[in-house]
Image (cartoon, rainbow, N blue to C red; front, side, top):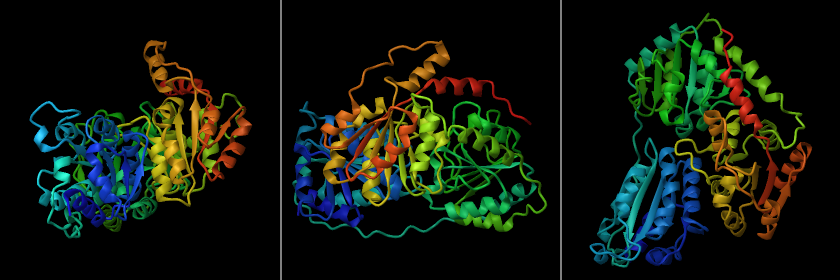
Length: 545
């Protein structure tokens, strides 16, 4: 057995199902070893697509997604998806091929110091230089990638080491003991909650990672405290729940801002600062905060908790609930916001404007998809509308890249989502800019049999940048481009292609596309004048307190 074969045995030992990547000269030994493995190798059309697939696989399963590239340009292509996984707390293990160790001291074809290159965008970056160390390195990589907070890890394998004899075996995977919060912190949190008049809960992605949604819903319901979720925590509480105030995270004032203004206590549960900076909702650092999470709170002048409850999130919520008493408390002010938030959402249900308003597209999407179907959002102007208007009943049914916010994630992410959940409908929502960055992975989807729908918000430009430019400079520059005929492009790849010509066509096309057994692409012209109307509304927004 050589090192590459031992590496693959170690990956099997970790329960790896798929490896996403591209073949290359320097990773040939690993590819050969995979020929005799239970692991399925998914050949992608670009390394960035491979990394995004591993990224979304990790986020949806909680198990590290694995991606593979060769050295040099293959590895640099991989980096964007690896960085995205790291900042979005998705467990991922990236493996790169490398020149032999005998060539690293001189200028060599395609050689880069990949360990140094990946270090800033991973939890750990290392190189296998002794074949017998492979089991330790793989076990450490997966342990780090999957431990709280999850993230990316990088393993570099030189080609001469890959071919060496490796007399070793995979390591036993030991169980990790749960950490539970201290009684003092639980009592302190319960005391603050019992005294608060207008508390508000801010729930983050950590609740989804900890699979603590059931305990969280019970906590909020029994204490009668309204909930705002970050973009990445959609579904932590059903959007139909009477205490759900939907998403917070728009970089301007909105309905939910009134709840934060009035709150005399914010209970942050599973919240990471990268999801929505505390300086946006607590700029003066004056709002009392309770931090409930798997890890201690990050240091931030706008986020100084009066109580930190660190440990198993579900257990902490149950214990605080048992200790709290809100009997006789008036309904918190923030609950009153729900009617205004819902009314704004529903006013676009029958809008017949064309090009189609983004609010109408999102409304129809919600109606077309079931409660457990999955939407993967790319990054662009449409992302803010997805975050604000697409609402979820279940965790991990709306995936938004919000830490690194990388364009091009939607189509590769949808491939991974469909592999994991073949019986659910999956839709990739993207702008025309993001679509052209990784549309080649539609061929991958077709080849491996993962049919999903790609819905393109088509405005012929980088709409989010134009929005920001006009807000700051009252004009835009360098943001417009031309597009191919997206429907015909899809058909040329053996897919289904659709073009929306009126608002009334959107829902029938969505239903037909979602019923296909091959990937489908829907080109939908969008009216992004709504971006500027939203800007004016939030600029002039005042709370009725």
